[in-house]
Length: 202
Image 1 (cartoon, rainbow, N blue to C red):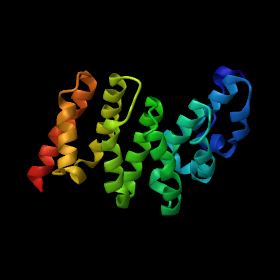
Image 2 (image 1 turned 90 degrees about the vertical axis):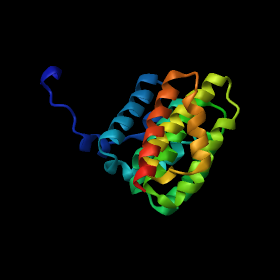
Image 3 (image 1 turned 45 degrees about the vertical axis):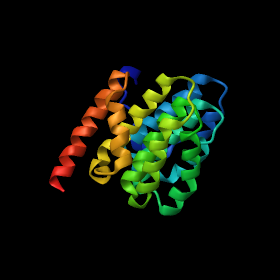
Image 4 (image 1 turned 30 degrees about the horizontal axis):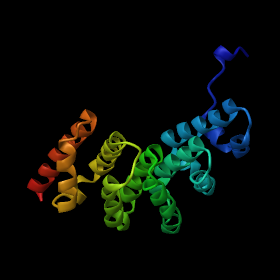
């Protein structure tokens, strides 16, 4: 059959045939093509990937940055279905990446931690504390810090009702409102409005 008329491979088939040995391939097209495949599956139907969670945990500690970021992102996608034991196992890894001073590691970790806080309420207090501490971490440049702050704002947006009235969060958002990075200031403005609206309805 002509490839142009071939039906696209179903997600079910993709996830049933995951070959993690591709991550060891010398050919970058094979290695990183597989990471794209994983991310596509994670975004569309994360439930089909739950059995691969131990592999994603290993990826989150991989020496290759792209593989590491893929693993962390997938942990975020699968966070709703993770057990408390699994959450406790991966949390130290995510926190290490969060505060490691490497912007992209931090950004992906912020996403995963935000998702864990969203679906595992017992983590919220400790995760919020760690996310706010990111502002004091040592990144290569001040602009990196401003970018990371914007990612924290994104992670807090779905949890506005949970953080309303918390002085440390309020102070964090107020500082972000005056960020010289326009996108970060804009994100802070959105969260600020949500915090104010949530406070009025409480």
